Amino acid sequence: MDQRRPFSAVVTTGDWHDAATAWASSALAASEARVRAVAQPRVRPWSTQLVIDTAQGGRPARFWFKANCRAQAFEPGLQAFLASVLPDAVAAPVAADAERGWMLTADHGATLREARGDSGATAGDWLEVVEEWARVQRALVDRTEEVVALGVPDCSPGTVPARFELMLERVLGLPAGHPSSPDDATASALRDARSRVAGAAATLAASGLPSTLQHGDLHPGNVFATAPGERGRLRVFDFGDAQWAHPVEAILIPAAVMEYGGLDPAPVEAAFRRVWAEHVALDDDRWAELVAAAEVTQAVNRSLTWWDCLAEASDAEAGEWGESVLRHLSRVLGRRDG
Image 1 (cartoon, rainbow, N blue to C red):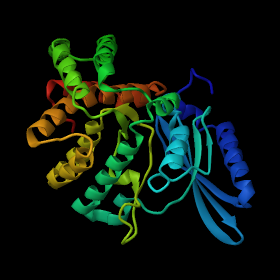
Image 2: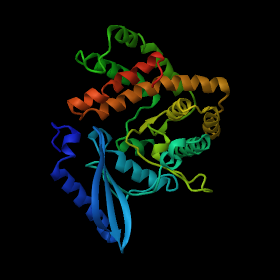
Image 3: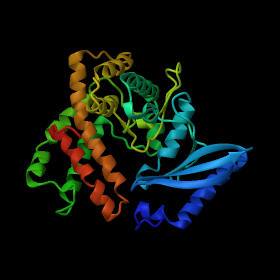
Image 4: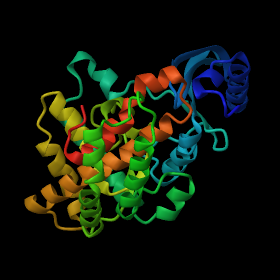
């Protein structure tokens, strides 16, 4: 890949398309699946997908090819590792190329979001998703070295203060007019937030809960729908935003999305707490303290994700998504993410 060119420019060339299709076709050759049609429905600064329709013995079958930007090239290796450790929770890729950040997966049907249509995910759906992810997290607490060695960023509490300094330096160094260049008041407030970030990180480090895999974007669009009666057989995917972090960070996106959709997240948070209560006692006051601290650390960690996602963006793409870095970093000031 020409590193001087935006990711989206590279993955929309004929040469790249031909190479990706050839790689996928080779991976499918053993199953005698014949590629019939390839479409590229989505291109972002951080990833792209190809929909590959095949025929095998007269039967149609669909596969998905995904390519990631350099910062998220760990995803194929991570998904393969998770599938080997937790096959009931994560589907194994058909093929993976960790060096290029390429992955081929079978189509597993509708996501929860697609299955529910206009009604959206129900409170029961959220309960299953969050409980399942908490179980995944519990199963991985002793696999730190293996997961981080795959390239997953280590964003555990002890690393957060230094990361905040890094992200602060980055946004303060952006040229005026950049979407994530802070105004004077915000810049001053961020400088003054150092002690708050350090305190939040210390609270989580002393919580008794071990760091584990944080999905980074846990919502019904990233979970395959489960059939009736298959509780506990959900399959989570899309691990490009994953980080190794404090487990409570994982509940923040589900809770925010539920609140935005008019659902009460309290029962889902309670279910998440019950899974982790097997590890450490979490009364209401302690839980509230950890959530408040996780809001701060996740803000810092999420700003890193966006910075990395936009590292290979074009000028136009930076203009469209560039504000995300400052928007998330500013949440250390107590601003909720929209």
